[in-house]
Image (cartoon, rainbow, N blue to C red; front, side, top):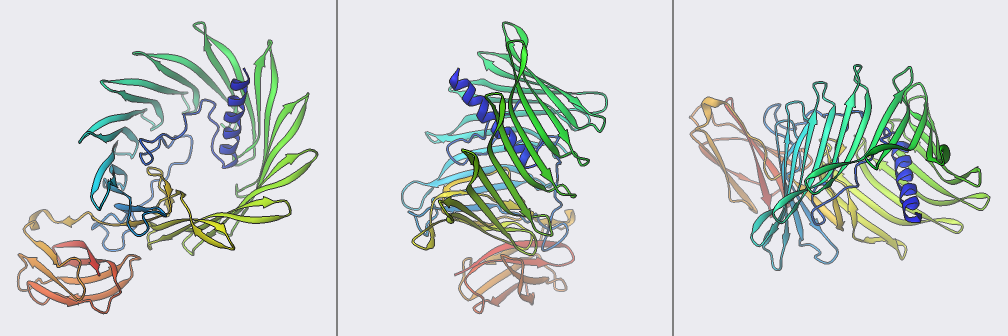
Length: 496
């Protein structure tokens, strides 16, 4: 019973923290993120109840020439130093959604070996349909995890199944189903677990709404003795924007409702969460546990968050985070600090750089000691189109570098005979570009860009093969854009 009560408390605290970040309540929560090994994709799903943004493609070169996102991420730790121990290679569809994600590791020397592989499918509206995760074992891909998702005609998720591979068969793990009323509001949610070949009922949640169609309450039933039995409930109040001001959790005990937890939040006029307080019901009174306060810049980016814990009869500082952004609202640094008796002490820091489209170039994890920041192994995020990438996680590394190794090439159907070749690659001083099949009056234009999308060199093709002196460029990765009135091609060039 103590263990169950503890787990219930943890789940409620997690639920509170999600709402503190302005996420909708879900009484029946999916399990936490799972991976094959350390790098496989989490179980993230974009629920219809939350705003779903499909960012438009930001292309540095041509409106229909390329999808500008990272394709390869090289991961480093503090032991391997300058040699990456892990790399992740991704492909995309025309919507910029991931299709495949291959993770490889170095197994002695410099040979890359398969580690994990993920496959995604999507419908035309960008809804996630299937997910398959595989691990490399004994020189073959072996099933690990699969997920399937189903949506109704309004695009609401109605079914989510997860299964795990057990040597010769798929074992059922979980099954969520959602039902929506005639106005499109989610009225019920069911959670089932797998037993042998069957799905077994576990929990049922029933939502109620106020006159503004905001969730007013959730009543949760547990499956016991082949019947649904009342288990717990949560009640909510909102401001005019729909933000959750209060959330009261109660358990059904001895034929009556017993208070369990209460969260209270405040927001500014545009919906930014300013404060969040969490309390537990103890000895017939509400007792403070912890609280948060948040600050924002003029663009709405969170600049700081502070947590305090209740100790005795007063608040004590616990930890705080500081966030710094560039002029395009890309997150540059997160600095984590802990309270040390009477002052704030630096703890950890994440650092990021981006290209001009808001795609990750580098990430770095640091620890503070001896009065300076030093390399440390931790978890880093990846960003694409200025947003956090939800389909990859990078734990247990010091830094990463993200590159574009392959770019979608646009060609007109009648012009497929034209080929463009760049060599040698890498090169130190001279690079040659050949446009095989080009006519005398259509030589094409060559433009060179650095990783941030800045133009560094431009040259008109003089012949079918043209040599370009790049000795004045700094060592690094560049992109060479060939274009004429028939096609556009973008190629990666490494200058050593």
